[in-house]
Image 1: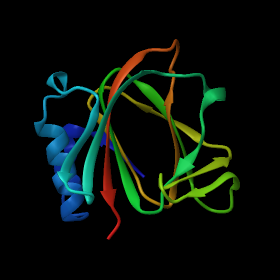
Image 2: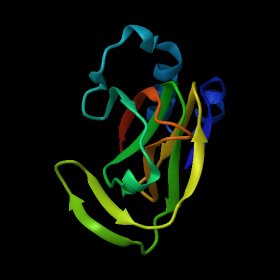
Image 3: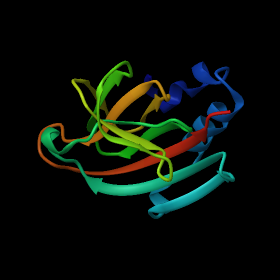
Length: 150
């Protein structure tokens, strides 16, 4: 897992070219003009999911992980907690769904504050639980870029 401000994106440009392309896209795009939806960046290799939602109570969160895609989650506006735990031997509550590339868990996590213009990168070895309210439920605009593991 990596968490940082989008202004520091160049620190991660050597991870791989797809991560660099993703972080540059997030930095250069004015999401105030982009509606919710799916946007291709590089076909099925890299695509963005733009959404707006209200943050939820911790009890409503569902810890998840992915096998085939890295999640790069960028908070364009608002703030939220994202739960995090390294994937080891946590209890699976919903087995891997290949169509949605997702597994759900029941596990303890650390809460990480993600504020406006921050991003978090979650690799297949990272359990994460996004969308948790900081104080009261708040409207956020988030972009999740899915980067295919190659």
